[in-house]
Image (cartoon, rainbow, N blue to C red; front, side, top):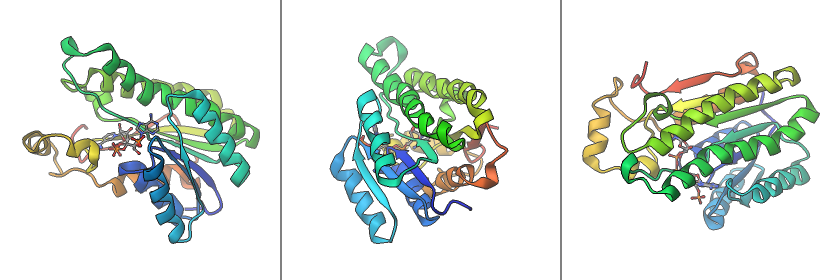
Length: 246
Ligand code: NAP
């Protein structure tokens, strides 16, 4: 995949899709910086990856905090000397019907899922612009395209990521940096395990391929977009949803 020796930052790398992305990149010979708010969890994943020979740096960082993000990028440059790939994966849900939604449910989701992407992208672009190259991959969601009752905050943030992706792609294309979004449908992670079994079954019945994705299937797509093979793809939303939305 022509990724050997590259350096990647993966936000929300302690579990789920982020963890699968970190380990898939590490397998390709990429040095990986993982962040999450839970230091113990992120260090555990880093130790596992190091055990299989990868170069990894675990960072406790909250993507809603500009200073945490700036320090993470500085730590990356100090340790590995460059930054080639940013995977904006950290995300949360705080579901509620719009009429009942509290300000903090709206703000926490927008701050994490959308503002967090802005913070990390701005910080990562500085070294990427100097290097005249880079890959930014943003995790959006089918919900940002289709909407979903009870997820107005999440849908707004994920739709916002799509606009952010396209605007940034246009700003930085001339410097050899591509910016794309990956839009999964439903993936087997803690986020979907939190749904009650009846809800999960109702969703599954709507998916032509009849199942949720594995985190590894999403990670394969992210690795492809990070590689030289995807050099001519920018400003796109790539769907991976088992046919749920066509
Ligand atoms: P997950 O299993 O809940 O993991 C979320 C990760 O994000 C954790 O590592 C978490 O660690 C981290 N995180 C949360 N808030 C953070 C913050 N403020 N700063 C830094 N890290 C933070 O989620 P997932 O299912 O893998 O989802 C990953 C991404 O894919 C999200 O953007 C999600 O919206 C998107 N997605 C998921 C699905 C799905 O079905 N699972 C579908 C479409 C899109 P800490 O809690 O320790 O910070």
